[in-house]
Amino acid sequence: MKPIVQISLDLTNIDEALETAAMALRAGVDWLEAGTPLILAEGLHGVRKLREAFPDTPIVADLKTMDGGYLEAEMMAKAGATHVVVMARAHAETVKVVVQAGKDYGVKVMGDNLGCPDMVSGAKWLADLGCDYIIHHIGYDERRGIAAQGLPMPSPMDQLKEVVNAVNVPVQAVGGLSLEQAVRCPEYGAPMVVLGAPLTIDADSFKTADGDLEASLRLICDKIHSYGEVAP
Image (cartoon, rainbow, N blue to C red):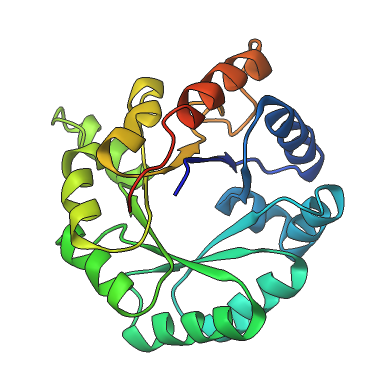
């Protein structure tokens, strides 16, 4: 598939999220993500507002579903999401019903391997259960906690090639990536590039980063889109 640039709107105010989304789309971003902080702050209202403002843009609802999977996926789909996220640490039945809801409501399912003891096996398990995409994810708290102990911070790049080779669906890497690492994800066979905290969002305050973000994003998008076709 051709590389996809997704911006994670990890904000807590819908007006700021809408402003950031409009800027990102002008710069060449392909998909919008209603980040977990935005969903917690605004709920389905935030997803609906994004859909109203951007009727033709794919929207990922990062609800990180752990239970009640069918209902959560249904609600997000009806609010306008085109993609929903289910966690690998959820029960297999939860993953299965989210996948079924995806089929019933025409949305794609992204399986997130955050917190798996074996990240590669977790990704493969999600793909085998029918997830359309894999999110290879090192969590915010995990990274900060390990760094606070003075230990090397884990990165999704550490096992990205292994995850890509283990599944037959597209992969995206999430969690503390530098700008240079994010842009290089397609080189690892991961065509779906997520830009968010801390690349475009201040990770501590969840406010839009300072500076000429639109110009920076345009350069980033041009670089990622220049890769051409990337095999899953």
